[in-house]
Image (cartoon, rainbow, N blue to C red; front, side, top):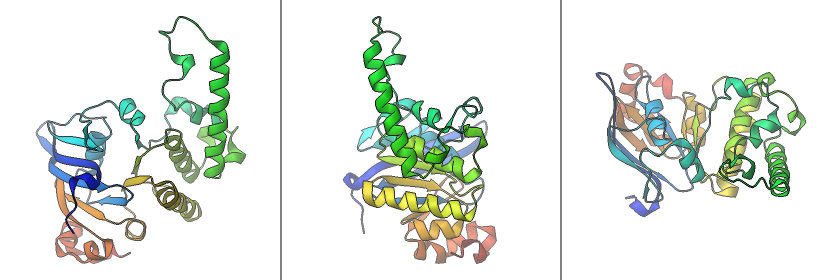
Length: 265
């Protein structure tokens, strides 16, 4: 079915990125439709992570455009994209690992009154009120991802799966319209992966949040994502429902010279 441009929440148009003599992203174009959980897969070196960097404002493209709800947001810095509802999950920075789980969430929202250093009047009452609201929202989000019991633990002490849940929780503080998930399954035990997957599906179905995720775990992608986009050599190779993508000979060829075992879901 032809997808009209106005269905697209995120549009990637002819993106190009060179690093030295290497073209990491090569005239890559695709749309992420609102309300989908879209999977982005491809062999190592296909350009997926660089593409995420271009979309989330960490790299500036050499050519092409990124549109969010029809607005050209190419090259905007991450915090401006965050304010527009495009959020990317990140590993917890080293300096935040000593902070508690709750404090990590309270760092997130942009434009807190207490941080507006250009405001000469320190409105203590307003700051306290905002901080209280922020703390309440952070606790609500922690409850949602089932991390409430750990709110006072240092973030660095969490397990791999708990850290992924905290990363997801941090994006939820921004009321996102689209979340970019970078390898959510990496380093996560199966029990917590089940919980993380459940939360992604819930947020998608109940709150209408769109997801674009890079993942090497094929069973997860094939069970969670529709559509699945395959990148190879810096551009889009194939796009379609998981059942179709899994059987596509071009995809099998791109992965391990046709060893279909890599795509078994």
